[in-house]
Image (cartoon, rainbow, N blue to C red; front, side, top):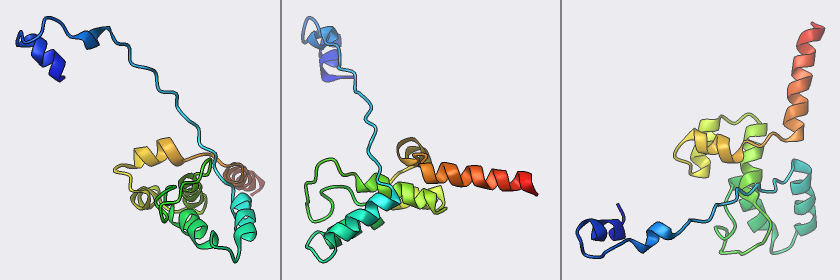
Length: 133
């Protein structure tokens, strides 16, 4: 119960002014996920620069922007890349969730299990191989 509801219930105020407020709807954001090729290209560009180590840490450890040395980069979400790569290479979702700091695997599935083109093609090829046998 909110403070204002409690105050109204206890006759400390006549009415809860927040009852007339409509909360804004939160638009769900779809993150841009780096493909393995995008990440490799990025590493080639930053190779030997001061950005190489932070980018490696972010991409391979799944650290969020700002978690790596307090960097503030716009429009790069390495955590999604890291989660996608873990899932692509068969790392168990429980392990991925733990590494990403998620309390449940549902969070990982909901937010990070993007079906990358490579994963979809690989799945189709595996199913096709079953038919050929």
